Length: 263
Ligand code: G3P
Ligand code: MG
Image (cartoon, rainbow, N blue to C red):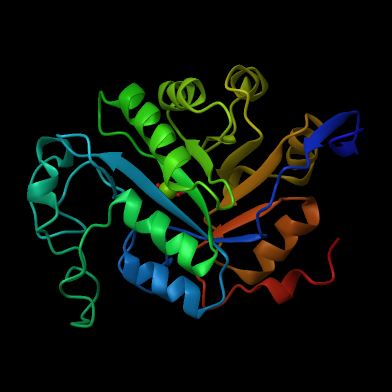
């Protein structure tokens, strides 16, 4: 095969410039999720890739946040999609985190700010497109086109989403960016879905993965990402099964050396 690793009859994309470990929600559980403080923790622990959740404000600013609503991770109230960026940018996104006063004043980052940090630190990104309800297509399209511009000259980000509609819009807006379909439990028709979206990877909860399933997915030519894996023994086993990327909250516990004996 000219451009890939021939494996069990199908070809895995050789265009996979990503490390084995990726920090969930920027810095796992060591800092407020989806913030630059998390990014700093990721750098401190020698991580070379971050996963984070990207969505749109009411006026279409691209920013990082997991939930549809503001209460859990900020001092705001209501639906994120009902707020303009001028409103969201004033929120505290760090005070909710544990008892620590250390993160008070932390703000919600824009996608542009994270792209700039990735460039400065040489860190790769898995951008999870996390649309607010009813905004799947526009979020997919704007994240993909924004990422294409913002990550120019860097390792291209890997886009992923639980939303078929968002990933389809991302594919149409920026076909050159690689995509991974996110599932919790891998459904029976996974192959049809990933083919339709022209994905290079399948991302699933590690709880529903098994050695034969990982082999089947990789035999179809797809990389496999498992989330959210916090136990080193489980991470090692998944890697032995052939899982390409492990998304973890425990950036203090899982390190790249633990995979050194694996191919
Ligand atoms: O991309 C893997 C993981 O982030 C998916 O779950 O809910 O943490 O975004 P969630
Ligand atoms: Mg995520």
